[in-house]
Each structure stands twice: as C-alpha cells, then as structure tokens.
Length: 365
Image (cartoon, helix red, strand yellow):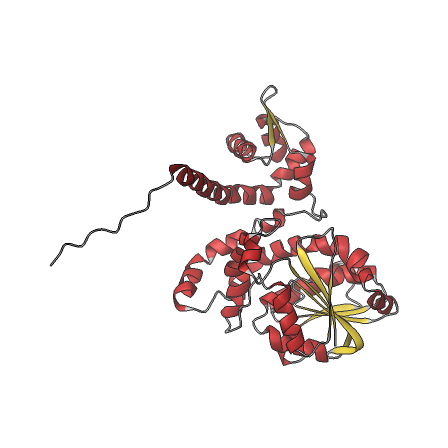
C-alpha cells in the first residue's frame, strides 16, 4: 500500500492574514463594547457627558453618580473606540454633537442607541439558536422579552415621529385626503403602537386600529395610546390576520413587518380583501435586496447587519412556528412577487432621499 501524501497547503499571504486578524479583533472588540454601551444606556452616561460639555474623570463620575474607577475605564474605552473624544492637555472627555445626535437625542432620525439593549436577547437565546441550526425550527417570539420590544419601539419611533405624517403619507395625496376627511386605518403588526400614535396626531379626524398577534405588545400599545390621550379613537387588538381582518379600511399599513411574518402570502391576500374600493396598502421595509451580491456591495455597507438581524430574530421567530422564514433581506423583487400573487395590480415604489435605510411601496388592488 503506497503512503498517502498530505495535500499541499496554499502559501499564506501574511499581510492578508494580519489584515483579517485585526478585522476579527475589531468585531470582537465591538461585541465587548456592547456591554459597556448597554450600561451607558441604562445609566444615561452618554447624556451626562453630552450635558457636561467637557469633563474630567472625577467630574464625570460625580455628575453620573457612578464609581470613579469604573468611570475612568469606561471613558477610556469609549475614547479608544471613537465614541467620545479625549483632550490630553486638559485630561477631559467630551461627546461630539454629531455623536450625541445618534447616541442621546431620542427624537433624532439617526438615534441608534435603542438597538444596543436588543442584543442581550440574542446572546440569551444563543443555545436555542444553536439547536435550530442543527435541527431546524427557531426561537419563538416570547423568548425575546420586554427589553427587546422596548428597544425596537425606541428604534422605530424616530422615523414615525419625523417622517410618517410629514413626508410619507403626503407622498400619496389621495390617501392623505381620505385621512383628513376621517378615513379608516389599520396597522398590521402594530407592535407597541408607535406608528398609529403619530398618525393619529397628524390626522385628528382619522379612525385607527392596530392588529398584532402578540398579546403583550397589544397590551403595551393600548397603554401607550391611553398615555398619549388617544384611546377614544385608537385601539389595538390581538389578531392573526392570516385568518381574516375585521372590517375594511381606506389605508392598511405594515412597517418592517412583512419579512417577519411566518405566513406572509395569506396575510397579503387578507390585506387586499380588507381594503375599501380604491384603498391603499402602504409598506415600509428595510433597504436590502434578495440578491446576495447586491447586499455584499450594499452602498451603506450594512448587508451583514441585515443577515445577522434575520438569523437572530426575523427569520428564526418565523421558523419557530413553522413559517416561511423569508428573513430581513427580502428586497423589492420578493415583495413584488408576493404582492402580485396576492392579487394586487398596482405597485409603486416611493423614494425618500432622507431615509436611505428603508424601502417604501404604495400598493392597490
């Protein structure tokens, strides 16, 4: 028997090895920084620094009411990571206003701090996710918890506050006219209810209802409507829309929902049936493609974010209940396919230059 020779290994480009190793280290660092950012979110540390203007370690610890040793290490880490700045001469730290716009201002269209606490649920569910990789299925929605839902509520709220009644609806003049005249609206997958709250404030004559199949979210949404003084004309109900949608509506909306739906095809059919004659279905989705190469070449470099969000939540919670599991990177092509299959005949993409992170569609029967 002849001796088997080992397969020759390709020569390594050590520069490429080093470049990739430091990329990995950067990713690992970002994961470690996540816990520091979560603590900052819980204790309001970014806000304290923004309000301080410039502060030494001792001043910051005093204003933030935290232990000075932890303050020094946190400030140092954030300075090295580029979130805050450090002046060597004065030995003071500060938060640039552009960074505060993303980290501190909850009404900013670029407020992203809300995404940070959502990561905790992903790590908590990693054992279930590993099992799903091996045996199929997924991680059920109830495993993501209140902190995840509140984080997503904070994240989505900014776009609704800044754009929904000011830009998105006015881009559809017929829809806006109906809402000003007291038209009816149903939001599918309404979550904690933020979209309809801002829509109700922008169109005081409209009558609105939100439907979601997750009871804890519906409970939170009704509490939010009451707190906003809108409970008299805005309500939320538990409803599996694949089994039918109560009544008919001039406007039906889904905001970052279709790609999450376990069974989007029957849901879209029911949405079409629930539109009044001449009614409109308005869709917001993430700005990704169903084509991998297009996401690799994504103009904002966020393709990996889309797939990671899909595996951690969007796809997995749908597969957990035996759903289709379309996932976050659905794209316009897939949406057009399902809309046509559901019997819609009109599909128009709406482009809003100030919102490059989403895709918007005006759809009618």
